[in-house]
Image 1 (tube, rainbow, N blue to C red):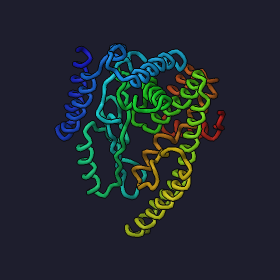
Image 2: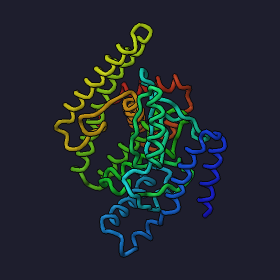
Image 3: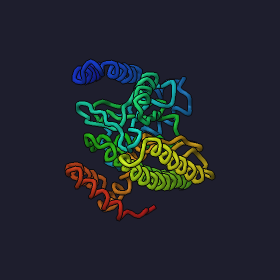
Image 4: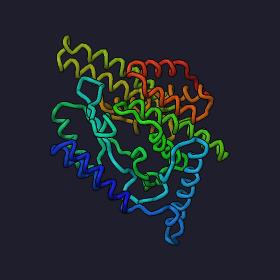
Length: 356
């Protein structure tokens, strides 16, 4: 129970530091995370139980092989992560609330002790997330709530596997494990785009090597197709974001109604382009199934998870795909001042060419 006591201690400390106004938020965080810890069972124990469904046993066995691969090949700090399992009633573990001003693509930042500021706020309780969303809606913000399959405690605790992982296809489950483990390597306070893009790059390159090792070229082709669709979607979102930023810079010249009309036209055009892109795609794309409802919050979240992925993949290539050297280079990059760091990432992105 030592680890459980640490969970209570740290989360209660967070609540105290944040003040009374955040007690409700941290209460649901405490109960949600502690519930996971209490209900988790060692994977080996679950595998030995005669009533464990065969499909779950298979997924857990694959996950344990992926843990070894992550540690030995990707040089990720696995520790005791993903060595236990907890069943959930649904395929997500938390939901994230994102809120952006009506005429801005810069999402609200929530700041926390130890982990710095983030462009989203996680809730184990969907009802509480919707309650917070309504408050932002009433204040004129664009909002979005997205289901999150997994989250990382950055190595503070041994994160468990759960239904959110095992309900995915094998390749997506393994990729998600690599993504969450990458957060244990480098985590830059207050820079969501840096953290998520880095983890996504490790996820993609790790999955490539994993599938090569498994001798599954057909599965790898599907992964490449998803990657291509993500990249093309990112291009569409990037172009629309440029249009919106130029529009939002005209707030002193245009009235709110003119801004709203032009904003909606740009978002509708993006939705139409995305629908055309997705029309022959075999599975839902990165923005969901068309038709999609888009706003500043959804665009901001999508870009933050993807905007620097080419840069980090280029940095790995320039590190000769030596993951230890790559992580050292990422750590040095994280120490640069923000302006210099972003300029370096932009230069890396410009040099990137798909090598698959």
